[in-house]
Length: 168
Image (tube, rainbow, N blue to C red):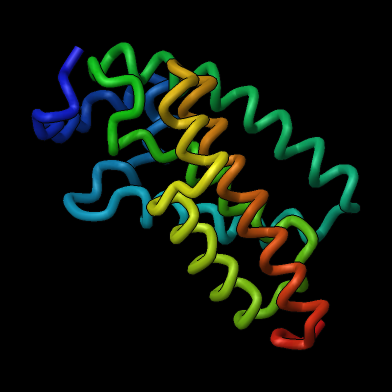
Protein backbone atom coordinates (compact mmCIF):
# COMPACT_ATOMS: atom_id res chain seq x y z
CA UNK A 1 0.00 0.00 0.00
CA UNK A 2 1.14 3.52 -0.74
CA UNK A 3 1.60 5.87 2.20
CA UNK A 4 -0.29 9.14 2.34
CA UNK A 5 3.02 11.05 1.94
CA UNK A 6 3.41 9.68 -1.57
CA UNK A 7 1.41 11.16 -4.41
CA UNK A 8 -0.84 8.46 -5.89
CA UNK A 9 -0.20 7.59 -9.49
CA UNK A 10 -2.90 8.10 -12.07
CA UNK A 11 -4.43 4.68 -12.70
CA UNK A 12 -4.24 3.15 -16.15
CA UNK A 13 -7.34 3.51 -18.33
CA UNK A 14 -7.21 -0.29 -18.77
CA UNK A 15 -8.84 -0.58 -15.33
CA UNK A 16 -12.06 0.61 -16.97
CA UNK A 17 -12.31 -2.80 -18.67
CA UNK A 18 -12.93 -4.38 -15.27
CA UNK A 19 -16.59 -3.81 -14.29
CA UNK A 20 -15.97 -3.14 -10.58
CA UNK A 21 -13.16 -0.69 -11.34
CA UNK A 22 -15.13 1.01 -14.13
CA UNK A 23 -17.92 1.69 -11.64
CA UNK A 24 -15.56 2.77 -8.84
CA UNK A 25 -13.76 5.14 -11.23
CA UNK A 26 -17.08 6.65 -12.31
CA UNK A 27 -16.81 5.25 -15.84
CA UNK A 28 -13.66 7.33 -16.31
CA UNK A 29 -14.58 10.49 -14.38
CA UNK A 30 -12.01 9.49 -11.76
CA UNK A 31 -9.27 9.57 -14.37
CA UNK A 32 -9.51 13.38 -14.62
CA UNK A 33 -6.02 14.79 -14.09
CA UNK A 34 -7.29 17.39 -11.61
CA UNK A 35 -10.16 17.29 -9.10
CA UNK A 36 -11.45 13.78 -9.90
CA UNK A 37 -13.84 13.98 -6.93
CA UNK A 38 -15.46 17.04 -8.43
CA UNK A 39 -15.91 15.21 -11.74
CA UNK A 40 -17.42 12.29 -9.83
CA UNK A 41 -19.84 14.63 -8.08
CA UNK A 42 -20.79 16.12 -11.45
CA UNK A 43 -21.65 12.60 -12.59
CA UNK A 44 -24.02 12.37 -9.63
CA UNK A 45 -26.12 15.30 -10.89
CA UNK A 46 -27.87 13.43 -13.73
CA UNK A 47 -28.41 10.50 -11.36
CA UNK A 48 -30.10 12.87 -8.90
CA UNK A 49 -32.23 14.32 -11.70
CA UNK A 50 -33.26 10.83 -12.85
CA UNK A 51 -34.26 9.92 -9.29
CA UNK A 52 -36.76 12.81 -9.23
CA UNK A 53 -38.84 10.72 -11.66
CA UNK A 54 -39.61 8.09 -8.99
CA UNK A 55 -41.09 8.30 -5.52
CA UNK A 56 -38.88 9.29 -2.59
CA UNK A 57 -38.91 5.75 -1.07
CA UNK A 58 -37.91 4.20 -4.42
CA UNK A 59 -35.15 6.79 -4.90
CA UNK A 60 -33.87 6.11 -1.37
CA UNK A 61 -33.86 2.36 -2.06
CA UNK A 62 -31.94 2.88 -5.31
CA UNK A 63 -29.33 4.98 -3.46
CA UNK A 64 -29.06 2.34 -0.75
CA UNK A 65 -28.42 -0.34 -3.37
CA UNK A 66 -25.91 1.88 -5.20
CA UNK A 67 -24.14 2.45 -1.87
CA UNK A 68 -23.90 -1.28 -1.21
CA UNK A 69 -22.57 -1.83 -4.73
CA UNK A 70 -20.14 1.01 -3.98
CA UNK A 71 -18.74 -0.76 -0.92
CA UNK A 72 -17.99 -3.76 -3.15
CA UNK A 73 -16.56 -1.94 -6.18
CA UNK A 74 -14.59 0.65 -4.19
CA UNK A 75 -13.01 -2.11 -2.13
CA UNK A 76 -11.94 -3.99 -5.26
CA UNK A 77 -10.62 -0.83 -6.95
CA UNK A 78 -8.75 0.22 -3.82
CA UNK A 79 -7.01 -3.14 -3.64
CA UNK A 80 -6.11 -3.01 -7.34
CA UNK A 81 -4.78 0.54 -7.00
CA UNK A 82 -2.92 -0.17 -3.74
CA UNK A 83 -4.65 2.72 -1.93
CA UNK A 84 -8.03 2.04 -0.39
CA UNK A 85 -9.33 5.59 -1.01
CA UNK A 86 -7.38 6.46 -4.14
CA UNK A 87 -8.41 9.86 -5.57
CA UNK A 88 -9.54 8.15 -8.81
CA UNK A 89 -12.22 6.22 -6.88
CA UNK A 90 -15.23 8.50 -7.29
CA UNK A 91 -18.28 6.24 -7.00
CA UNK A 92 -18.66 7.56 -3.46
CA UNK A 93 -18.96 11.11 -4.86
CA UNK A 94 -21.46 10.00 -7.50
CA UNK A 95 -23.76 8.43 -4.91
CA UNK A 96 -23.07 11.14 -2.32
CA UNK A 97 -24.06 13.90 -4.73
CA UNK A 98 -27.30 12.12 -5.58
CA UNK A 99 -28.03 11.57 -1.87
CA UNK A 100 -27.45 15.26 -1.15
CA UNK A 101 -30.18 16.15 -3.67
CA UNK A 102 -32.57 13.33 -2.75
CA UNK A 103 -35.44 15.50 -1.47
CA UNK A 104 -34.68 18.69 -3.41
CA UNK A 105 -36.63 20.21 -6.29
CA UNK A 106 -35.08 19.72 -9.73
CA UNK A 107 -33.93 23.32 -10.18
CA UNK A 108 -30.48 24.72 -10.91
CA UNK A 109 -30.22 26.90 -7.73
CA UNK A 110 -30.86 23.85 -5.56
CA UNK A 111 -28.45 21.67 -7.53
CA UNK A 112 -25.75 24.36 -7.51
CA UNK A 113 -26.10 24.91 -3.75
CA UNK A 114 -26.20 21.15 -3.11
CA UNK A 115 -23.11 20.63 -5.25
CA UNK A 116 -21.17 23.34 -3.40
CA UNK A 117 -22.28 22.07 0.02
CA UNK A 118 -21.49 18.44 -0.74
CA UNK A 119 -18.03 19.24 -2.11
CA UNK A 120 -17.31 21.49 0.90
CA UNK A 121 -18.32 18.83 3.44
CA UNK A 122 -16.47 16.14 1.45
CA UNK A 123 -13.25 18.18 1.26
CA UNK A 124 -13.29 19.82 4.72
CA UNK A 125 -14.45 16.62 6.47
CA UNK A 126 -16.12 18.04 9.60
CA UNK A 127 -17.23 15.63 12.30
CA UNK A 128 -18.43 12.90 11.74
CA UNK A 129 -17.15 12.85 8.14
CA UNK A 130 -13.48 13.08 9.15
CA UNK A 131 -13.86 10.51 11.91
CA UNK A 132 -15.42 8.02 9.50
CA UNK A 133 -12.70 8.75 6.95
CA UNK A 134 -9.96 8.01 9.50
CA UNK A 135 -11.53 5.12 11.38
CA UNK A 136 -13.28 2.96 8.78
CA UNK A 137 -11.23 1.27 6.09
CA UNK A 138 -11.81 -0.47 2.80
CA UNK A 139 -14.78 0.03 0.54
CA UNK A 140 -17.07 0.65 3.51
CA UNK A 141 -14.90 3.55 4.67
CA UNK A 142 -14.71 4.99 1.16
CA UNK A 143 -18.50 5.09 0.95
CA UNK A 144 -19.35 6.03 4.56
CA UNK A 145 -17.51 9.33 4.78
CA UNK A 146 -19.11 10.59 1.56
CA UNK A 147 -22.55 9.41 2.64
CA UNK A 148 -22.06 11.34 5.90
CA UNK A 149 -20.95 14.42 3.92
CA UNK A 150 -24.05 14.02 1.75
CA UNK A 151 -26.36 13.82 4.76
CA UNK A 152 -24.82 16.99 6.23
CA UNK A 153 -25.05 18.78 2.88
CA UNK A 154 -28.62 17.59 2.33
CA UNK A 155 -29.67 18.69 5.82
CA UNK A 156 -28.06 22.10 5.31
CA UNK A 157 -29.84 22.42 1.97
CA UNK A 158 -33.17 21.53 3.59
CA UNK A 159 -32.57 24.14 6.31
CA UNK A 160 -31.76 26.75 3.65
CA UNK A 161 -35.02 25.93 1.87
CA UNK A 162 -37.01 26.07 5.12
CA UNK A 163 -35.41 29.41 6.02
CA UNK A 164 -36.41 30.80 2.62
CA UNK A 165 -32.83 31.20 1.41
CA UNK A 166 -33.72 28.89 -1.49
CA UNK A 167 -37.24 28.80 -2.92
CA UNK A 168 -38.98 25.49 -2.37
